[in-house]
Length: 203
Image (cartoon, rainbow, N blue to C red; front, side, top):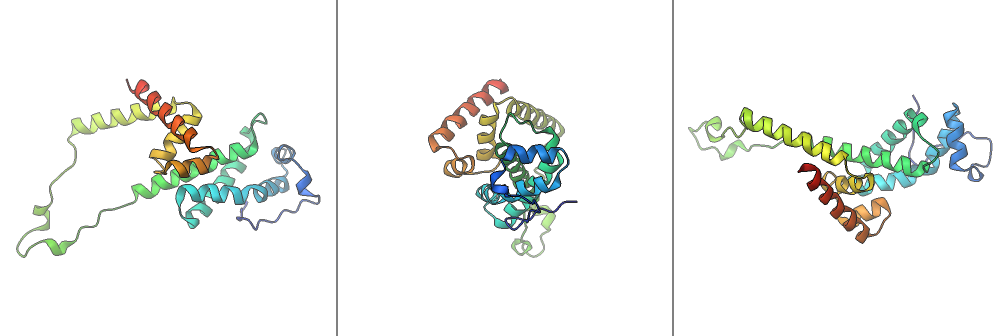
């Protein structure tokens, strides 16, 4: 397994790496040159770290995202097509990894119940009502969730990206603009189009 270290990763390439374009390094890495990929990770780790931090708002989580992103990029490098920029492809992987991390953290949250509020002689169970949905409601909710997933996947990539950062990542318009290196008005425009697409697909 290859370990990717944030910022401090050392590259054993016996050449002036600054003179080598990303495209050449990617081509070499796709041919099995692990040194070339080490140089790519060294070159882009700082930028990806700050992208991840803007989404997670936590440096430890951001470092985990960097590790996960480079591992995924290394594993799926054979699928990368030179028509796109490597930095754009890597950023997309990092954003997805950051969003996945946020989703996992949200699912793991639990509600704590303070037993001290229960008066003497009362049963805690009697104080809590069963708020679970009945089978019909569960079925309807699952159907809606499936339709929503399909509708989101049908969005244009740049619209889906902004929509996910806003709603799944819970980022402000300014944070999204910084993460994607676009203007805030552009974020608003893409978000509006994403919501219009969502309504149309859901109908």
